[in-house]
Length: 463
RNA sequence: GGCUGAAUGGCAGAGUGGUUAUGCAGCGGUUUGCAAAACCGUGUACCUCGGUUCAAUUCCGGGUUCAGCCUCCA
Image 1 (cartoon, chains in turn cyan, blue):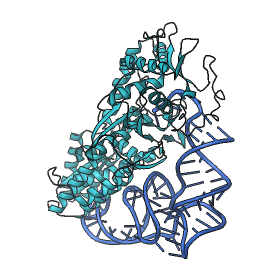
Image 2: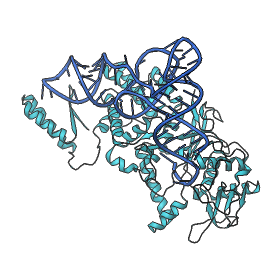
Image 3: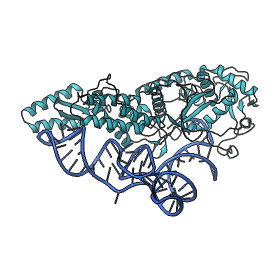
Image 4: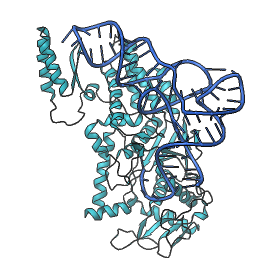
Protein backbone atom coordinates (compact mmCIF):
# COMPACT_ATOMS: atom_id res chain seq x y z
CA UNK A 1 0.00 0.00 0.00
CA UNK A 2 1.58 3.21 -1.23
CA UNK A 3 1.67 6.18 1.10
CA UNK A 4 2.70 9.64 -0.06
CA UNK A 5 3.28 12.75 2.01
CA UNK A 6 0.83 15.37 0.79
CA UNK A 7 1.85 18.98 1.35
CA UNK A 8 -1.83 19.93 1.40
CA UNK A 9 -2.58 17.85 4.49
CA UNK A 10 0.97 17.80 5.85
CA UNK A 11 0.87 14.10 6.42
CA UNK A 12 1.38 10.81 4.68
CA UNK A 13 -1.77 9.63 2.96
CA UNK A 14 -2.70 6.36 1.36
CA UNK A 15 -2.49 6.97 -2.35
CA UNK A 16 -5.73 6.42 -4.24
CA UNK A 17 -5.57 7.19 -7.95
CA UNK A 18 -8.54 8.90 -9.55
CA UNK A 19 -8.76 6.13 -12.12
CA UNK A 20 -7.83 2.64 -10.96
CA UNK A 21 -4.25 1.64 -11.82
CA UNK A 22 -3.54 4.96 -13.51
CA UNK A 23 -1.48 7.87 -12.28
CA UNK A 24 -1.39 11.33 -13.79
CA UNK A 25 1.54 13.41 -12.58
CA UNK A 26 2.60 16.94 -13.41
CA UNK A 27 5.94 18.37 -12.31
CA UNK A 28 7.14 21.93 -12.71
CA UNK A 29 10.26 21.72 -14.79
CA UNK A 30 12.93 24.13 -15.82
CA UNK A 31 12.96 27.69 -17.02
CA UNK A 32 15.44 27.32 -19.83
CA UNK A 33 17.76 30.32 -19.72
CA UNK A 34 20.80 28.68 -18.15
CA UNK A 35 22.43 25.34 -17.39
CA UNK A 36 20.89 22.97 -14.87
CA UNK A 37 22.51 22.93 -11.45
CA UNK A 38 22.47 20.19 -8.84
CA UNK A 39 19.18 21.47 -7.44
CA UNK A 40 17.54 20.93 -10.81
CA UNK A 41 19.20 17.52 -11.00
CA UNK A 42 17.52 16.63 -7.75
CA UNK A 43 14.05 17.41 -9.11
CA UNK A 44 14.70 15.42 -12.27
CA UNK A 45 16.10 12.41 -10.43
CA UNK A 46 13.54 12.40 -7.60
CA UNK A 47 10.50 12.52 -9.85
CA UNK A 48 12.10 10.02 -12.19
CA UNK A 49 12.51 7.72 -9.20
CA UNK A 50 8.87 8.31 -8.27
CA UNK A 51 7.67 7.58 -11.81
CA UNK A 52 9.82 4.44 -11.94
CA UNK A 53 8.46 3.16 -8.66
CA UNK A 54 4.88 3.86 -9.70
CA UNK A 55 5.44 1.90 -12.90
CA UNK A 56 7.17 -0.86 -10.97
CA UNK A 57 4.02 -0.93 -8.83
CA UNK A 58 2.02 -1.62 -12.00
CA UNK A 59 0.49 1.81 -12.38
CA UNK A 60 -0.03 3.16 -15.85
CA UNK A 61 1.78 6.47 -15.42
CA UNK A 62 1.35 9.62 -17.43
CA UNK A 63 4.19 11.88 -16.37
CA UNK A 64 4.23 15.46 -17.62
CA UNK A 65 7.07 17.90 -16.94
CA UNK A 66 6.78 21.31 -18.50
CA UNK A 67 9.37 23.60 -20.01
CA UNK A 68 9.05 27.32 -19.33
CA UNK A 69 10.39 28.90 -22.49
CA UNK A 70 9.11 32.45 -22.09
CA UNK A 71 9.57 34.69 -19.06
CA UNK A 72 11.40 37.79 -17.84
CA UNK A 73 14.70 36.06 -17.23
CA UNK A 74 14.69 34.49 -20.66
CA UNK A 75 14.00 37.82 -22.33
CA UNK A 76 16.71 39.49 -20.31
CA UNK A 77 19.28 36.80 -21.00
CA UNK A 78 18.53 36.71 -24.72
CA UNK A 79 19.00 40.47 -24.90
CA UNK A 80 22.28 40.25 -23.03
CA UNK A 81 23.50 37.53 -25.36
CA UNK A 82 22.21 39.30 -28.42
CA UNK A 83 20.39 36.23 -29.60
CA UNK A 84 16.79 35.36 -30.21
CA UNK A 85 14.69 33.84 -27.48
CA UNK A 86 14.24 30.69 -29.49
CA UNK A 87 17.97 30.30 -30.02
CA UNK A 88 18.55 30.70 -26.30
CA UNK A 89 15.83 28.34 -25.13
CA UNK A 90 16.64 25.67 -27.71
CA UNK A 91 20.26 25.71 -26.63
CA UNK A 92 19.38 25.20 -22.98
CA UNK A 93 16.69 22.63 -23.68
CA UNK A 94 19.33 20.61 -25.51
CA UNK A 95 21.73 21.05 -22.57
CA UNK A 96 19.02 20.01 -20.12
CA UNK A 97 18.30 16.88 -22.14
CA UNK A 98 21.95 15.94 -22.11
CA UNK A 99 22.21 16.36 -18.34
CA UNK A 100 19.00 14.51 -17.79
CA UNK A 101 20.06 11.60 -19.95
CA UNK A 102 23.44 11.39 -18.22
CA UNK A 103 21.66 11.14 -14.88
CA UNK A 104 19.66 8.17 -16.10
CA UNK A 105 16.40 10.07 -16.13
CA UNK A 106 13.73 8.54 -18.35
CA UNK A 107 12.16 11.37 -20.37
CA UNK A 108 8.67 12.35 -19.17
CA UNK A 109 5.77 11.23 -21.34
CA UNK A 110 5.07 14.82 -22.29
CA UNK A 111 7.16 17.97 -22.08
CA UNK A 112 4.81 20.82 -22.98
CA UNK A 113 6.25 24.25 -23.68
CA UNK A 114 4.53 27.46 -22.65
CA UNK A 115 4.98 29.12 -26.05
CA UNK A 116 3.09 26.29 -27.74
CA UNK A 117 0.07 26.56 -25.43
CA UNK A 118 -1.00 30.16 -25.85
CA UNK A 119 -4.53 29.16 -26.86
CA UNK A 120 -5.05 27.18 -23.69
CA UNK A 121 -3.53 29.94 -21.58
CA UNK A 122 -5.71 32.63 -23.16
CA UNK A 123 -8.80 30.44 -22.82
CA UNK A 124 -8.20 29.95 -19.15
CA UNK A 125 -7.65 33.64 -18.52
CA UNK A 126 -10.83 34.47 -20.43
CA UNK A 127 -12.76 32.03 -18.30
CA UNK A 128 -11.35 33.56 -15.15
CA UNK A 129 -12.39 37.02 -16.29
CA UNK A 130 -15.87 35.76 -17.19
CA UNK A 131 -16.23 34.18 -13.81
CA UNK A 132 -15.09 37.41 -12.15
CA UNK A 133 -11.96 35.84 -10.73
CA UNK A 134 -9.74 38.12 -12.77
CA UNK A 135 -9.75 41.69 -14.01
CA UNK A 136 -7.92 43.84 -16.51
CA UNK A 137 -5.78 46.50 -14.87
CA UNK A 138 -5.38 50.04 -16.10
CA UNK A 139 -2.06 49.04 -17.68
CA UNK A 140 -3.80 46.24 -19.63
CA UNK A 141 -2.19 43.56 -17.47
CA UNK A 142 -4.66 40.92 -16.34
CA UNK A 143 -4.67 40.05 -12.65
CA UNK A 144 -6.13 37.26 -10.59
CA UNK A 145 -8.33 38.50 -7.76
CA UNK A 146 -7.34 36.45 -4.75
CA UNK A 147 -10.24 37.74 -2.67
CA UNK A 148 -12.50 35.77 -5.03
CA UNK A 149 -11.01 32.48 -3.84
CA UNK A 150 -11.52 31.78 -0.18
CA UNK A 151 -9.16 28.79 -0.03
CA UNK A 152 -6.18 30.93 -0.96
CA UNK A 153 -3.21 30.04 1.26
CA UNK A 154 -4.31 26.50 1.96
CA UNK A 155 -1.30 24.78 0.41
CA UNK A 156 1.42 26.97 1.84
CA UNK A 157 -0.27 27.54 5.19
CA UNK A 158 -0.37 31.26 4.62
CA UNK A 159 -2.90 33.50 6.21
CA UNK A 160 -3.93 36.24 3.81
CA UNK A 161 -4.28 38.80 6.58
CA UNK A 162 -0.74 38.15 7.63
CA UNK A 163 0.68 38.04 4.16
CA UNK A 164 1.30 41.72 4.22
CA UNK A 165 2.54 42.25 0.74
CA UNK A 166 4.68 45.23 0.04
CA UNK A 167 6.93 44.44 2.94
CA UNK A 168 9.66 43.17 0.72
CA UNK A 169 8.46 43.91 -2.74
CA UNK A 170 7.10 47.04 -4.34
CA UNK A 171 3.34 47.13 -4.67
CA UNK A 172 2.02 47.65 -8.15
CA UNK A 173 -0.52 50.43 -8.34
CA UNK A 174 -2.61 48.69 -10.96
CA UNK A 175 -3.61 45.86 -8.67
CA UNK A 176 -6.77 45.95 -6.60
CA UNK A 177 -4.99 44.05 -3.88
CA UNK A 178 -1.22 43.78 -3.47
CA UNK A 179 -1.49 40.00 -3.29
CA UNK A 180 -3.24 39.71 -6.66
CA UNK A 181 -0.92 38.17 -9.20
CA UNK A 182 -0.51 38.67 -12.92
CA UNK A 183 -2.06 36.32 -15.47
CA UNK A 184 -1.22 38.25 -18.61
CA UNK A 185 1.46 40.87 -19.05
CA UNK A 186 0.89 43.57 -21.63
CA UNK A 187 3.81 43.74 -24.05
CA UNK A 188 6.40 46.44 -23.69
CA UNK A 189 8.39 47.66 -26.67
CA UNK A 190 10.80 45.09 -28.13
CA UNK A 191 9.35 42.26 -26.15
CA UNK A 192 8.06 39.08 -27.69
CA UNK A 193 4.28 38.96 -27.56
CA UNK A 194 1.20 37.06 -28.58
CA UNK A 195 -2.16 38.54 -29.51
CA UNK A 196 -4.95 38.32 -26.96
CA UNK A 197 -8.34 39.88 -26.21
CA UNK A 198 -6.51 42.27 -23.85
CA UNK A 199 -3.92 43.29 -26.39
CA UNK A 200 -0.53 41.88 -27.26
CA UNK A 201 1.34 40.38 -24.37
CA UNK A 202 2.60 37.22 -22.74
CA UNK A 203 1.48 34.94 -19.96
CA UNK A 204 2.44 35.35 -16.34
CA UNK A 205 4.44 32.50 -14.91
CA UNK A 206 1.77 30.70 -12.92
CA UNK A 207 -0.95 30.45 -15.56
CA UNK A 208 1.10 28.36 -17.99
CA UNK A 209 1.33 25.49 -15.54
CA UNK A 210 -2.41 25.55 -14.87
CA UNK A 211 -3.18 25.66 -18.58
CA UNK A 212 -0.70 22.96 -19.59
CA UNK A 213 -1.35 20.56 -16.73
CA UNK A 214 -5.12 20.58 -17.19
CA UNK A 215 -4.68 20.41 -20.94
CA UNK A 216 -2.40 17.37 -20.75
CA UNK A 217 -3.95 15.55 -17.80
CA UNK A 218 -7.48 16.91 -17.41
CA UNK A 219 -8.88 19.35 -14.88
CA UNK A 220 -8.42 16.93 -12.02
CA UNK A 221 -5.31 14.80 -11.76
CA UNK A 222 -3.38 12.78 -9.19
CA UNK A 223 0.00 14.22 -8.37
CA UNK A 224 1.55 17.64 -8.76
CA UNK A 225 5.19 18.06 -7.86
CA UNK A 226 8.14 20.39 -7.82
CA UNK A 227 10.78 21.92 -5.63
CA UNK A 228 9.87 23.13 -2.19
CA UNK A 229 10.42 26.74 -3.19
CA UNK A 230 7.52 26.56 -5.63
CA UNK A 231 5.03 25.91 -2.88
CA UNK A 232 4.42 29.61 -2.49
CA UNK A 233 3.46 31.51 -4.44
CA UNK A 234 3.64 29.39 -7.60
CA UNK A 235 1.67 26.33 -6.58
CA UNK A 236 -0.70 28.29 -4.41
CA UNK A 237 -1.51 30.44 -7.41
CA UNK A 238 -1.88 27.44 -9.68
CA UNK A 239 -4.48 25.98 -7.37
CA UNK A 240 -6.39 29.25 -7.20
CA UNK A 241 -6.42 29.75 -10.97
CA UNK A 242 -7.21 26.19 -11.88
CA UNK A 243 -9.96 25.55 -9.39
CA UNK A 244 -11.60 28.88 -10.11
CA UNK A 245 -11.42 28.31 -13.86
CA UNK A 246 -12.56 24.68 -13.95
CA UNK A 247 -14.71 24.50 -10.84
CA UNK A 248 -13.06 21.18 -10.10
CA UNK A 249 -10.43 19.98 -7.68
CA UNK A 250 -7.00 20.48 -9.26
CA UNK A 251 -4.36 18.00 -8.03
CA UNK A 252 -5.02 15.51 -5.24
CA UNK A 253 -1.50 15.08 -3.92
CA UNK A 254 1.20 17.75 -3.75
CA UNK A 255 4.76 16.46 -3.60
CA UNK A 256 7.66 18.80 -2.87
CA UNK A 257 11.29 17.81 -2.80
CA UNK A 258 13.76 19.44 -0.41
CA UNK A 259 16.65 21.70 -1.36
CA UNK A 260 20.22 20.95 -2.16
CA UNK A 261 22.40 22.80 0.28
CA UNK A 262 25.97 23.93 0.38
CA UNK A 263 27.46 24.68 3.77
CA UNK A 264 24.03 24.58 5.38
CA UNK A 265 22.66 27.07 2.90
CA UNK A 266 20.26 26.62 -0.01
CA UNK A 267 21.89 26.18 -3.40
CA UNK A 268 20.32 28.76 -5.66
CA UNK A 269 20.83 30.95 -8.63
CA UNK A 270 20.27 34.12 -6.66
CA UNK A 271 22.84 33.22 -4.00
CA UNK A 272 25.25 32.18 -6.73
CA UNK A 273 26.42 29.19 -4.69
CA UNK A 274 25.51 26.57 -7.26
CA UNK A 275 27.33 23.90 -9.19
CA UNK A 276 26.05 23.00 -12.62
CA UNK A 277 25.46 19.38 -13.44
CA UNK A 278 28.14 19.40 -16.09
CA UNK A 279 30.69 20.85 -13.73
CA UNK A 280 30.10 18.00 -11.33
CA UNK A 281 30.14 15.50 -14.21
CA UNK A 282 33.73 16.45 -14.90
CA UNK A 283 34.70 15.07 -11.49
CA UNK A 284 32.17 12.34 -10.85
CA UNK A 285 30.39 9.71 -12.88
CA UNK A 286 26.75 10.55 -13.48
CA UNK A 287 25.53 7.51 -11.61
CA UNK A 288 27.45 8.64 -8.54
CA UNK A 289 25.47 11.89 -8.61
CA UNK A 290 22.24 9.95 -8.99
CA UNK A 291 23.18 7.66 -6.12
CA UNK A 292 24.11 10.66 -3.99
CA UNK A 293 20.70 12.23 -4.64
CA UNK A 294 18.84 9.03 -3.83
CA UNK A 295 20.86 8.31 -0.70
CA UNK A 296 18.85 10.80 1.30
CA UNK A 297 15.08 11.08 1.52
CA UNK A 298 13.53 13.37 -1.09
CA UNK A 299 11.99 15.73 1.47
CA UNK A 300 15.20 16.11 3.50
CA UNK A 301 17.81 18.69 2.73
CA UNK A 302 20.65 17.26 0.65
CA UNK A 303 24.05 18.58 1.59
CA UNK A 304 26.28 18.97 -1.41
CA UNK A 305 29.97 18.32 -0.69
CA UNK A 306 32.82 16.41 -2.26
CA UNK A 307 33.03 14.28 0.89
CA UNK A 308 29.44 13.18 0.39
CA UNK A 309 29.96 12.54 -3.32
CA UNK A 310 33.09 10.51 -2.53
CA UNK A 311 31.11 8.48 -0.08
CA UNK A 312 28.39 7.90 -2.64
CA UNK A 313 31.05 6.67 -5.00
CA UNK A 314 32.41 4.22 -2.42
CA UNK A 315 28.99 2.86 -1.63
CA UNK A 316 28.03 2.50 -5.28
CA UNK A 317 31.37 0.83 -6.05
CA UNK A 318 30.67 -1.72 -3.37
CA UNK A 319 27.38 -2.61 -5.04
CA UNK A 320 28.95 -2.80 -8.48
CA UNK A 321 31.80 -4.93 -7.12
CA UNK A 322 29.29 -7.42 -5.78
CA UNK A 323 27.60 -7.51 -9.17
CA UNK A 324 30.92 -7.84 -10.98
CA UNK A 325 31.86 -10.83 -8.88
CA UNK A 326 28.46 -12.47 -9.29
CA UNK A 327 26.77 -14.36 -12.07
CA UNK A 328 24.02 -12.11 -13.35
CA UNK A 329 21.24 -13.68 -15.32
CA UNK A 330 18.33 -11.36 -16.08
CA UNK A 331 16.00 -14.31 -16.52
CA UNK A 332 16.37 -15.44 -12.93
CA UNK A 333 13.35 -14.61 -10.80
CA UNK A 334 14.08 -12.02 -8.07
CA UNK A 335 13.74 -13.19 -4.47
CA UNK A 336 10.34 -12.29 -3.08
CA UNK A 337 11.61 -11.65 0.43
CA UNK A 338 13.84 -8.80 -0.71
CA UNK A 339 11.41 -7.50 -3.29
CA UNK A 340 8.75 -7.21 -0.61
CA UNK A 341 11.09 -5.46 1.76
CA UNK A 342 12.20 -3.08 -0.95
CA UNK A 343 8.62 -2.33 -1.96
CA UNK A 344 7.67 -1.70 1.63
CA UNK A 345 10.42 0.91 1.89
CA UNK A 346 9.48 2.59 -1.39
CA UNK A 347 5.77 2.46 -0.61
CA UNK A 348 6.50 4.44 2.53
CA UNK A 349 6.70 7.83 0.87
CA UNK A 350 9.48 6.75 -1.50
CA UNK A 351 12.08 5.93 1.14
CA UNK A 352 15.00 5.49 -1.22
CA UNK A 353 17.71 5.47 1.52
CA UNK A 354 16.00 2.53 3.15
CA UNK A 355 15.64 0.88 -0.24
CA UNK A 356 19.36 1.34 -0.86
CA UNK A 357 20.16 -0.30 2.48
CA UNK A 358 18.36 -3.38 1.15
CA UNK A 359 20.60 -3.33 -1.90
CA UNK A 360 23.58 -3.40 0.45
CA UNK A 361 22.13 -6.36 2.29
CA UNK A 362 21.84 -8.16 -1.02
CA UNK A 363 25.41 -7.29 -1.90
CA UNK A 364 26.69 -8.67 1.39
CA UNK A 365 24.68 -11.87 1.06
CA UNK A 366 25.90 -12.28 -2.49
CA UNK A 367 29.53 -11.63 -1.53
CA UNK A 368 29.55 -14.23 1.19
CA UNK A 369 28.53 -17.02 -1.14
CA UNK A 370 31.63 -18.53 -2.69
CA UNK A 371 29.93 -20.66 -5.30
CA UNK A 372 28.76 -17.91 -7.64
CA UNK A 373 26.96 -20.31 -9.94
CA UNK A 374 24.76 -21.71 -7.19
CA UNK A 375 21.04 -21.09 -7.41
CA UNK A 376 21.08 -18.90 -4.34
CA UNK A 377 23.95 -16.78 -5.62
CA UNK A 378 22.35 -16.14 -8.99
CA UNK A 379 19.06 -15.28 -7.32
CA UNK A 380 20.70 -12.74 -5.03
CA UNK A 381 22.53 -11.14 -7.92
CA UNK A 382 19.42 -11.02 -10.06
CA UNK A 383 17.45 -9.48 -7.20
CA UNK A 384 20.13 -6.86 -6.62
CA UNK A 385 20.17 -5.77 -10.22
CA UNK A 386 16.40 -5.87 -10.57
CA UNK A 387 15.68 -3.77 -7.49
CA UNK A 388 18.46 -1.31 -8.21
CA UNK A 389 16.84 -0.86 -11.59
CA UNK A 390 13.73 0.51 -9.93
CA UNK A 391 15.95 3.30 -8.63
CA UNK A 392 17.66 3.64 -11.99
CA UNK A 393 20.93 2.28 -10.58
CA UNK A 394 23.38 -0.55 -11.35
CA UNK A 395 22.32 -1.04 -14.95
CA UNK A 396 25.78 -0.40 -16.36
CA UNK A 397 28.34 -3.08 -16.93
CA UNK A 398 30.07 -3.37 -13.52
CA UNK A 399 33.54 -3.42 -14.99
CA UNK A 400 32.74 -0.37 -17.10
CA UNK A 401 31.61 1.50 -14.02
CA UNK A 402 34.56 0.45 -11.86
CA UNK A 403 37.05 1.28 -14.59
CA UNK A 404 35.19 4.39 -15.64
CA UNK A 405 36.83 7.73 -15.72
CA UNK A 406 36.45 9.70 -12.56
CA UNK A 407 37.81 12.79 -14.21
CA UNK A 408 39.80 13.72 -17.22
CA UNK A 409 43.14 14.09 -15.53
CA UNK A 410 46.17 14.50 -17.73
CA UNK A 411 48.27 11.65 -16.48
CA UNK A 412 45.62 9.02 -16.98
CA UNK A 413 46.73 5.78 -18.59
CA UNK A 414 44.74 4.08 -21.28
CA UNK A 415 43.60 0.51 -20.99
CA UNK A 416 46.32 -0.88 -23.21
CA UNK A 417 49.03 0.77 -21.14
CA UNK A 418 47.44 -0.51 -17.95
CA UNK A 419 47.22 -4.04 -19.27
CA UNK A 420 50.85 -3.90 -20.38
CA UNK A 421 51.97 -2.95 -16.88
CA UNK A 422 49.79 -5.65 -15.36
CA UNK A 423 51.39 -8.23 -17.66
CA UNK A 424 54.85 -7.04 -16.69
CA UNK A 425 53.95 -7.23 -13.03
CA UNK A 426 52.57 -10.74 -13.38
CA UNK A 427 55.76 -11.77 -15.15
CA UNK A 428 57.74 -10.37 -12.22
CA UNK A 429 55.46 -12.20 -9.82
CA UNK A 430 56.02 -15.58 -11.47
CA UNK A 431 59.73 -14.90 -11.19
CA UNK A 432 59.09 -14.09 -7.52
CA UNK A 433 60.58 -10.68 -8.14
CA UNK A 434 58.20 -9.01 -5.69
CA UNK A 435 60.18 -5.81 -5.44
CA UNK A 436 59.64 -5.18 -9.13
CA UNK A 437 56.01 -6.29 -8.96
CA UNK A 438 55.31 -3.90 -6.13
CA UNK A 439 57.09 -1.12 -7.92
CA UNK A 440 54.82 -1.52 -10.93
CA UNK A 441 51.76 -1.65 -8.70
CA UNK A 442 52.86 1.53 -6.91
CA UNK A 443 53.28 3.17 -10.27
CA UNK A 444 49.69 2.28 -11.16
CA UNK A 445 48.35 3.39 -7.81
CA UNK A 446 50.00 6.74 -8.39
CA UNK A 447 47.83 7.20 -11.49
CA UNK A 448 44.69 6.18 -9.65
CA UNK A 449 44.57 2.51 -10.62
CA UNK A 450 43.94 -0.15 -7.99
CA UNK A 451 44.77 -3.78 -8.74
CA UNK A 452 43.03 -6.85 -7.47
CA UNK A 453 44.69 -10.25 -7.80
CA UNK A 454 42.00 -12.86 -8.09
CA UNK A 455 42.09 -16.59 -8.88
CA UNK A 456 40.89 -15.63 -12.37
CA UNK A 457 43.74 -13.20 -12.86
CA UNK A 458 44.55 -9.61 -12.11
CA UNK A 459 41.82 -7.02 -12.57
CA UNK A 460 41.92 -3.29 -12.11
CA UNK A 461 39.67 -0.38 -11.25
CA UNK A 462 39.94 3.36 -11.19
CA UNK A 463 39.73 5.06 -7.82
C1' G B 1 7.14 39.32 12.91
C1' G B 2 3.92 35.02 10.63
C1' C B 3 4.22 30.07 8.83
C1' U B 4 6.99 25.19 7.62
C1' G B 5 10.45 21.63 8.60
C1' A B 6 14.86 19.77 11.10
C1' A B 7 18.17 18.30 15.44
C1' U B 8 20.47 10.45 15.53
C1' G B 9 27.12 7.16 16.97
C1' G B 10 33.83 10.15 14.05
C1' C B 11 30.99 11.37 9.21
C1' A B 12 26.66 10.51 5.94
C1' G B 13 21.82 8.78 6.70
C1' A B 14 17.09 5.54 7.77
C1' G B 15 13.96 4.06 11.61
C1' U B 16 11.44 2.70 16.12
C1' G B 17 7.14 3.29 22.56
C1' G B 18 10.91 -2.07 25.16
C1' U B 19 15.00 -6.28 20.44
C1' U B 20 20.80 -5.19 14.31
C1' A B 21 19.38 0.11 10.02
C1' U B 22 22.73 0.78 6.05
C1' G B 23 27.26 2.95 3.98
C1' C B 24 32.08 5.38 4.80
C1' A B 25 36.04 5.79 8.29
C1' G B 26 38.44 3.17 12.80
C1' C B 27 39.95 -1.27 15.49
C1' G B 28 40.79 -6.90 15.77
C1' G B 29 40.76 -11.34 12.76
C1' U B 30 40.35 -14.62 8.05
C1' U B 31 42.33 -14.47 3.11
C1' U B 32 46.85 -12.64 0.21
C1' G B 33 54.08 -13.22 -1.36
C1' C B 34 52.55 -8.23 0.27
C1' A B 35 48.28 -5.68 -1.17
C1' A B 36 43.36 -4.90 -3.13
C1' A B 37 38.51 -6.79 -2.98
C1' A B 38 35.65 -9.81 0.16
C1' C B 39 34.12 -12.18 4.70
C1' C B 40 33.79 -12.50 10.28
C1' G B 41 33.94 -9.74 14.86
C1' U B 42 33.85 -4.87 17.11
C1' G B 43 30.83 1.08 18.69
C1' U B 44 26.13 1.46 25.82
C1' A B 45 23.95 7.34 19.00
C1' C B 46 19.52 9.55 19.53
C1' C B 47 19.77 18.76 21.24
C1' U B 48 17.66 20.39 26.23
C1' C B 49 13.96 20.68 30.20
C1' G B 50 9.33 18.96 31.86
C1' G B 51 4.92 15.56 31.11
C1' U B 52 2.30 10.84 29.74
C1' U B 53 3.85 5.56 30.42
C1' C B 54 5.74 -0.32 33.73
C1' A B 55 9.07 1.61 29.74
C1' A B 56 10.60 7.47 25.31
C1' U B 57 15.59 8.74 21.02
C1' U B 58 10.48 7.47 19.39
C1' C B 59 4.13 10.45 21.96
C1' C B 60 2.75 15.62 24.26
C1' G B 61 4.29 20.66 25.94
C1' G B 62 8.23 24.53 26.80
C1' G B 63 13.21 25.96 25.40
C1' U B 64 17.72 26.22 22.35
C1' U B 65 20.03 25.92 17.65
C1' C B 66 19.73 25.37 12.31
C1' A B 67 17.40 25.60 7.53
C1' G B 68 13.41 27.26 4.38
C1' C B 69 9.03 30.16 2.73
C1' C B 70 6.48 35.01 3.27
C1' U B 71 10.22 38.45 -3.64
C1' C B 72 12.50 35.41 -8.89
C1' C B 73 14.09 30.42 -7.57
C1' A B 74 13.86 23.19 -8.40
